[in-house]
Length: 202
Image 1 (tube, one colour):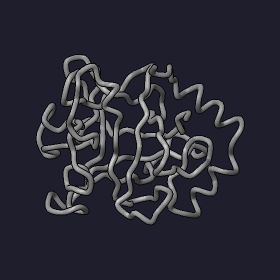
Image 2 (tube, helix red, strand yellow):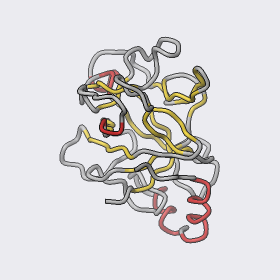
Image 3 (tube, one colour):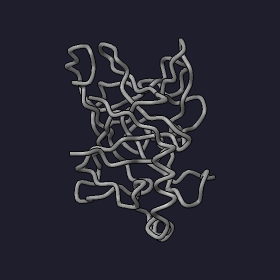
């Protein structure tokens, strides 16, 4: 069952309960969730825009796309290219994995996210399932959001960096949202998303 998530109440909780732990994010290169804890590669996380809502999977058959929703969020997992690392770090290449059982269709393709043509226009540059780990079209990284909405909140920008994992464009593409047929899809064009993370319940 998908949880009802509103990241704004979430952030209000954060601002009243946590200030010291987030400040540590300025002294190292780890990625932190809204509870001030390091994001672990072995745990699922909800992802949400800092200004509210959540990130979820489209309710369609394969390929499954990633969309922005005002009320709901699905969990995602991160797989690090650096196998010995336990926690996510700034600018470290990683794969993003999804639970395809959440799709209404019987999807048998890979659970890793990818962007087939990041230099194209929507909808060809939308994030979708079917990627392969440690390949250019599935080579993501997280960086600190350049101008955070709130200094007390650790927020990040997700990027696709093809050349880090092989051949492809040498620049990184900010993961953004754009509206297509009334739905906000995540892809390589549109408004860059300022993202925060919440650890999902086991």
